[in-house]
Length: 363
Image (cartoon, rainbow, N blue to C red; front, side, top):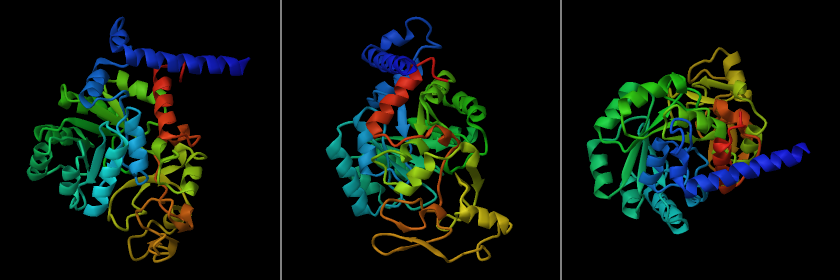
């Protein structure tokens, strides 16, 4: 009987999602402050041609397969462009474009080189996403010259103001709850109102600790135009993440994550949130020593299919072409990992997230 009720609620939520998206005006007919999608979310979806105000964060597992799958069903897939060579970037963007006519984005971490940006724009990437810094005026000129849009991830109100002054089409407000490399030291719902105050009518996405539709709903009702999810999309069928990494995620809790600079080789001093594992615990037990004095420093913990070695404190997240002690590597995860309990396809996940968002009984 309980199973029948759960199936009924699930099917009702999905049906409700379909009805709402086929007739968006229905969402705001009664109480625009409580109905979904909110006016802000509807504006974001219209601006980018989306079916859902859901963005997939550009984590290490976000290759063309995942990006095309998320965008193909009406979310916004974001490809990581920072570490791609110009030729690899050209192939990746072309692959996504061949698989979906919908918009997708390419991310650049501005703490690193963005040498492939001209090729990405030339190949037709419709949206550029920047994090850990602000794009230069030359970058923005190139983006606009290619007819593309751009957004900036921010960690405080002053960063939001600077991005808006550069003409950003959207902002991502990242709270300290996020997994991976995190600039913010402020909780999402403390930071979000400050960023919204700066943003005015510019769309703001909430990010950090969001891995379930009820949290997307909370973000939308708090004034965000949408939500960006990272850890939840790592644990999908299309993600490039290593199977061992995915399996650890679905068994972990947010309380098992920790902020540190443990895995800083390749990105010195960058604070990150990851799951506690033997490498992190051994480093902490030694007093969190600096580079040059860390236990096991220089250990090869894994190798790529081309034979490239991955050392113990490298900042790379485990991808599926690796062999070795995968769970000794940086297992990036946000505090929302509590809600990661399976490995769905990206299409299934996006539909489920939106159904959960619309389901008022979901807590």
